[in-house]
Length: 207
Image 1 (cartoon, helix red, strand yellow):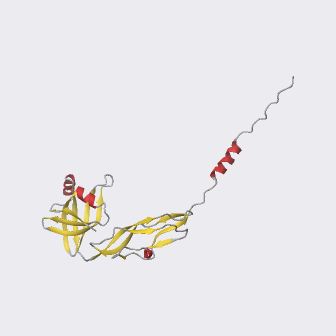
Image 2: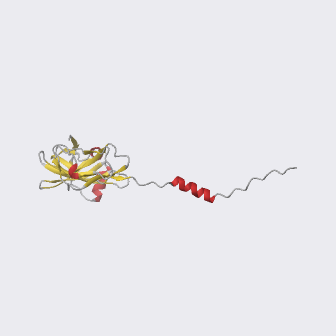
Image 3: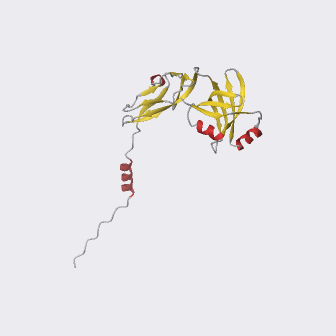
């Protein structure tokens, strides 16, 4: 996974008022923690943070005055209406160390025509090196029949990643399609029952 470099400024003002002032300047308040260090309060450029967070488990290189660290986003607060980033918690990581993260689970192919795909989990927890976190894991569901289930332990994880979730956890299964009632036939029968009886056609009288 490539690094995203983001400029970081040490932050010395705190509280709601200070945070609002930072956001009005199109910046984001953040906290960096981990490895036994005292939490480091930072200010980051808002637009760059928003772009970086589009990548799951993005690895961020924080560079600035007194700051040169690698970090992973561990908590993101967003405005519930506008969606912009209000605050970010960052976990300090080192090259070579293992971290536990959740990666996306996607599917390829189509299940058997008689079934429907029921994906119960869209992410799964794995352990991987902090600088080599996989972008996700694919499950080939082509032709899977009704009753088939795929558990976390059956996932073909990318090289270097190990499962951190319960291997018996069901990721997806194929369920039977619901039986469709013959609605058209029922509607036709109802219409016929409700229609008024037609009067017999009058016969022409002989003159």
